[in-house]
Image 1 (tube, rainbow, N blue to C red):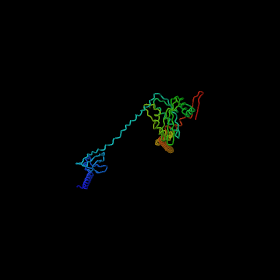
Image 2 (image 1 turned 45 degrees about the horizontal axis):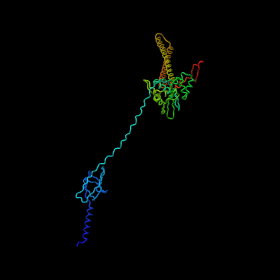
Image 3 (image 1 turned 180 degrees about the horizontal axis):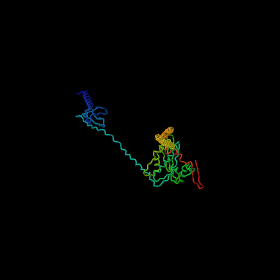
Image 4 (image 1 turned 60 degrees about the horizontal axis):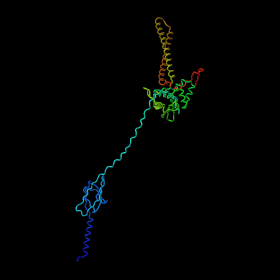
Length: 399
């Protein structure tokens, strides 16, 4: 008779064997495309740096294999490992290189439209009659600067082709003193327009120089006679100097103000650097030099007179010596002629010495003489006395 407990023991033994067989890990062979990869099973790291042929143990059933390597895309796959596999399962793992980042999309920026080509102003063929008004000064600018600037502007516009210009000084020479004073007292644009109309010109060129601190501001304006308004203007702000900085920009300012008129052939824009000599003229007036030179010539003339006188006395003394060989002569006469010769010799030496000293002084003064009389240029702008012909006779006016 079979005992029941023996069957129960057999059943338990079979169940335990099955459990042990199910829990026993299975060897899996991995073939990696690169070595040094990290292998994970169900999220747990089993190999830190795997060889290309790497054997790992996994539990039977479905497992998730993941292989990671720097520079490669991670490989992950879910596999089912049979517990009763007769041969070791082999899994091929091909790691792909991480692709380089895609270049950013090229942003095509449309090129800016070409800048509009500004055509140079057309050269004018219409003759222009122009009057250059006296320069107005403000802010402590020396009067000599204004006087020379008026002359420089006149010279500059006369370089332009088909432009005829006249200055207020030239107009003043044709008018009486009272008319000059009214002329120079004109201030606003309307008055200047009337003035230009009276002169029969097309335009009037005005200039202003202002001193503001360490700056100088030059302003030029074209006043149209037909419309009694400003046709154009040019302004230059400059660092204050001795005045040369103002004349250095006259050429460019006139070019900006009259772009439609070209420079005459053979002429160049700009004020000559010789204008600096007028701003700082030599200290001596011409009469000083001529006085010294005249005194030197007078001393030469006196010395010449004494030289001829000395020759006459010496000839008399020689004749007296010849006569003494033939007949006795008076000792008083001999001594008198000798004294006169000595006196004339001293006089001519003094005269020629003074002449030489004055000539040397005149030569030195010539280096420091204001030959062009720039210092008195302002005084010559207005005549102290003006004579004007009227229907009833002559009108005399004075300052």
